[in-house]
Image 1: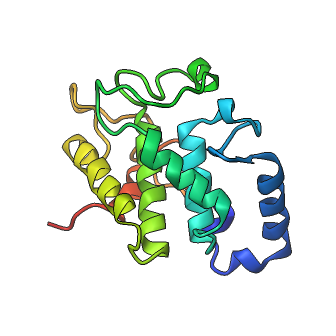
Image 2: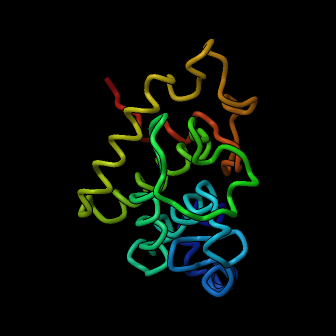
Length: 180
């Protein structure tokens, strides 16, 4: 994902090698998986790699399309709504798709949807609508706060970092936040 932050990095031999590895070992028909099997698909990981593909100019590749389709169909952006995803591998990581979905997964999915929307010129209206839905979920959190008490979602939420880490930071969502 960090390579996607470097302009024109898609043409670098090292980036090509990394992309080849991802295609061979992590891309599955459901999206991007931790171990190359669909059951091990982790929402935040899928979103991080989908975003990277979009930023590298690869939004129309099958791998990126699978990642976006997973987000559109299975990622939850509201509380109390069950997911249709049947993968059991993510269960060991905690609350990814439980009653209150993991905020890191939501934030990373927002970035992936936003990057996809920009990379495709907004051609996919379903992605644009889903991006609006996720922002409707994120804005009451003031981008980084817990609804209960107003504390930061995680200890790193206000830390500047480049490239962004696995943990969510507020700067990642400012790109998609409304200006009014």
